[in-house]
Amino acid sequence: MPTVTMIGGGQLARMTHQAAIALGQRLRVLAEKPDDPAAQVSPEVVLGSHTDLGALRKAAVGSHALTFDHEHVPTEHLEALVAEGVNVQPPPQALVYAQDKLAMRVKLSELGLPVPAFTPVGSVDDAVRFGDEHGWRIVLKAVRGGYDGRGVWMPESAEEAAAIATDQLAYGVQLLAETKVELKRELSAMVARSPFGQAATWPVVETVQRKGQCAVVIAPAPGLPEDTAAAAETMALNLARELGVVGVMAVELFETVEGELLVNELAMRPHNSGHWGMDGARTGQFEQHLRAVLDYPLGDTAPLAPVTVMANILGAPQAPEMSMDERLHHLFARMPEAKVHLYGKGERQDRKIGHVNILGDDVAEVREKAERAAHWMSHAIWTDGWDPHE
Image 1 (cartoon, rainbow, N blue to C red):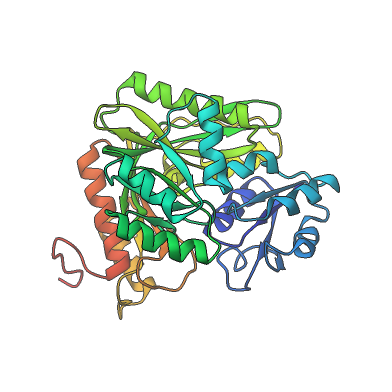
Image 2 (cartoon, rainbow, N blue to C red; image 1 turned 90 degrees about the horizontal axis):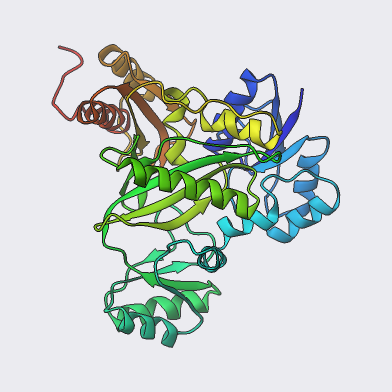
């Protein structure tokens, strides 16, 4: 059976390892530290940095496909691996559009896809000019490396924009500016595609962001018109084909107050907005990603319940005295239907340390349960005041 190498030892690699076990495969990971989430569980761990071509070569030896749990591997290293015969999936010519936000914006515009107005920022004057043109409803972004709200700024004046641009450009950070969108909500359209060209989508989901990072995912997105959902899935399918994506891809979308869809960002790997499918879909994103990069026929993505809500377990400002194991006991006693996924990470404020999935029929009820469960696991406090000892 095949060996797949995944670059990165985080929770996405850890959950991909779970899927690989069921398929009889081996997942080798390139991790930076022995206690990285995936390194704790994978039988094959190569220790090293994703920026070290030698470490990448070592991890790739004998593997049937090389893939990613993050997008930050230098493109030139991946091109060198491809030239040496490594099966890199998604290929570097596709992955660059998930690495480089400016290249992504330019490419999507060339393809005629809807994106916010944007401009590269090579100087303070570029930022100030764009802000003046758009009434200071703008966002400054790092072109590379930002995630979970990092590398994103929302200046409200020329002075703020000038200070941010001066600091970041001095550190060698490439910037772009784009208009701040009047949002109704954020959505995500997940798609998987194989080298053969087979593709599959999951239902479009709503993502709830707090402090710049995903906190809750509701699948499918409640109240989304069928034609809008179909348009989002079709956009994701066409984009995966146009870019030559192999594996799973999340197309993060803005739904405007007028009901229009704009593409925010792309992720060419398993993604937080797809975690609901581990328990809520016939084939979840981690199994599907392995199927895709190995060119297997793709799995059925149909939901298993009318509603699935995923809530991230985010570290509390101060870790509770109650152990995580005891919190898990109490959660299962109160909510036996909860499906909990923990990542083997230490607790610190706002860190993603796990997630909870709950399936059901009523959106409000299921969401309340999932968020209450996740808050309990983070804080050891029931939001409704329930006492586990009474």
